[in-house]
Length: 252
Image (cartoon, rainbow, N blue to C red; front, top):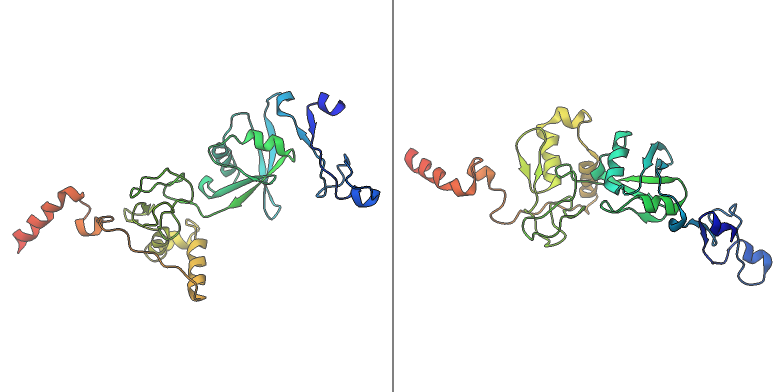
């Protein structure tokens, strides 16, 4: 009753530490010094708590502290990722946040998960994100619902297993590619100053090269017919291809 009056509820599970000591079957434990072995844990009762901002320490998986952020009621995970980026963390599209044992979805409220965990910290994992979309990716071939991680590094959509429905745009020129692998290769050889000047993520391509050298590498697939026609059209829209044919005929 005392625990309920301050806004806590009890999860009735046996304690793996106390049970061997007592030798009397399951034993309910309130000893919070049994960190990592607790089976009875006080969890915040959301119905009895006043919604307010909470300060959360952001750590990398190595344990290094990124900083402290304030999480307010209604804040979605994507907004929290943007706050972590301002602290010096990776781009939001390359973050995966973990609170307790839960991976936070980008469009869901982060406040409840952070408060229910009760540890006062979240962990940020750096993942391979899409530098072109900086958000959920979409596929124009199958028109599936936009989502993070929809297009793999080699340009293949998880929904239709085809390439060519997503464009990876070069931030240093006007070219675009059907895969992030193709874009990384382009920047490596045509924008060497930016590539080697810490203006681009080089880890993705280096990991691909190591896999290829080990004999288990995957190669980008050809985009579907009718996509990525810029090189053939000279930058014109597909509807204006007749202009090219007329010009060629005139020169001939």
